[in-house]
Image (cartoon, rainbow, N blue to C red; front, side, top):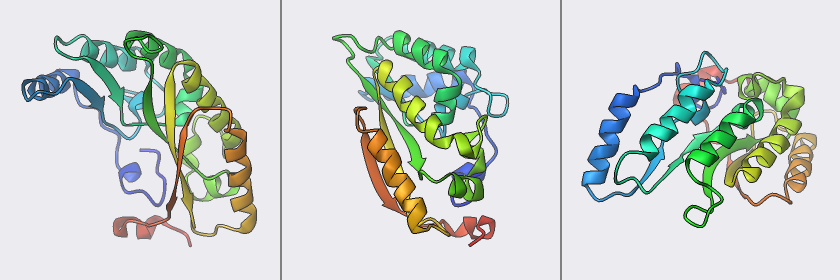
Length: 207
């Protein structure tokens, strides 16, 4: 949905599965012995959103309804966007309270978030939508603020950094290194991965 030029899922139209269907899927998983539910989406904070504007009521309602299904012991999410986190901190706080994070029962959970680069130039060139409603020049501040918000709400960011993006220079790499150093104070997992474009996304890349 955020139109990152190298990522096929991000090039697709955003769709939100009705909560009634999701609840049925959860019940099927419960019957098979599962006790925890991971909500999967490119950015869980864009559930039933209007474009990239977080629909806080819909997102918190989703977590509340799933967590309250009898038999569900815990709920987490696969992917989230740091831009969504930074633009709607109150939604993160409400989710944390719904899931009872920071308690003995549920000390913490983790969401996967994509840093990808510390270079505003590469953000502007390859993934401008990633930072909306902010600008590419805001990206470093968005990442740091996103980590801060998640940490305060007992959610550990598990993040990726992409090495070898098209057009990447030594200066871009150094900016990424500098950004990662600024994140040292936050409990997190940062995973470097090598750039590997999906064949279907070749036509969207400007190399």
